[in-house]
Image (cartoon, rainbow, N blue to C red; front, side, top):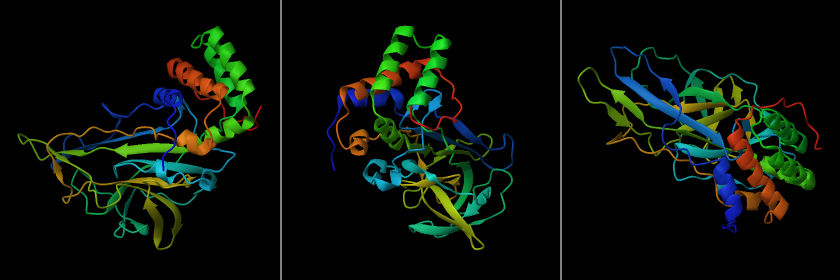
Length: 311
């Protein structure tokens, strides 16, 4: 399935969501001095639309689950993935720190809590550790954009002339534009890198890669006495708010790598065309481009998500 390529939209999305590559955020660092091997792993995440400090994800008037986004959620890697959030679904169940999922190669599988191992030993196969929970984000509306713009202009982060042009375009586009932009923004990316194992003093570190034949990042959407019901987060559509996200723990069956590979989760080409069902109109394209440029430079902070109505 191919959508027409729009170079202006592609450039705007490139400014908003550039490829995630060098120097990924360090999330987990094992004990500094331990008898066992030392391990380091990384996690990177982002949204298709993120105006610097403004992350506009979730809360769409047009539910992402009503649109087939799967072709745009697929990536070539099972450890650097995309998924979409359904802001109308919520998970309020438990989120154990560590679970084991023996049937993780199935479409849906059960994970059961296990005791967290102390130290830095490699885990047993099919063991996953809690990385985060899916967070609700403010709904992107005309009011929300204008509120953020006012704050950015007041701080001097956005020049008055540019702010005036953005306001005119934000007032000119329809409510449907913002509703569909929220669907685009519901697409999120997350990735985990290889693990560096240091066997001991004087020994060269070994790089372990996540296996390709099982899910590396999983999310759970329901719980019962038997455990958590989970699935591979890769290309998952309609993940509920609050769902726990687990990362596969390194184990002895992980393959070795000669060097650290590059992490990359590029923005999905053609997603805007698919969601809108048409090419963006000139004002819409210009607004998207203006927001990408203005807020990417502003370092704007997230405003209160209390504004719920389109203005």
